[in-house]
Amino acid sequence: MVNLNDKLERALKVKVISLEKRISKRNNVYLAAVNTKHNLRKKYIVKEYKDWPAGNEVFILHILKQRGLKVPQVIWYDDKILIMEYIHGLLLAELLLDRESDQELWINALAEWLHELHSCMKIKNKNPSEQTCLCMADLNLRNFIFDGRIFYGIDFENVSFYPPERDLGVICAFILNNDPMFTRWKYNICSLLISRYDKILINECGSRLNPGLIWFYLIKELKAAAERRKPQRELLNDKIKQLQYSSIFQAY
Picture (cartoon, rainbow, N blue to C red):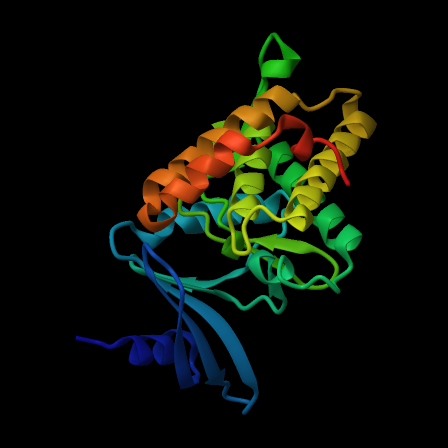
């Protein structure tokens, strides 16, 4: 049986220096450092699928790339392995720990990336306020990388169709319950993200987000997090009860 190192070397015509395992619940994900035939050092992200064929995500990445969305370039794939370009930058989870970062810059960039995703595919509805669009199935904070100027989205094994408010509510839930949880800093980030996205919509087509719908998806995701995380369940349920509608839609 060919091991992963051998497979990468044959596929890319390189010498693998190291394979560093990355955090992933569903699949095996590695940061591969290699030497090219011209003796250049390069990095790639390698995804080894446990249950799904690689072609599902490859197809979605190609479609998004064609439509101008910032996602990793597919380098090589077969049925179970996907090799992608390595994006240099900070994860959204890391940005939330850096109080010295340019908050306005990266919040604006995140709002713009989400809007671009939602603009890729839309399902029209007679009522414009009920329009559904392409959404990210997994809005985990480790699935967004900021290169200092723009965001890239990663992990597209699955996509879904919801109103754009769903993604905003869910990502705000992830922001709020990520350590340190429910800080004033996190509430402010959520408020500014929603406000920036709303301004993009107004400038584009004159429509606005539905705050009540964002709130619905935010609370729904927080309740799901409480179910998943038994050690923090009581704390999360208490925070859900205390959470004020105004704290999300008003920047401090």
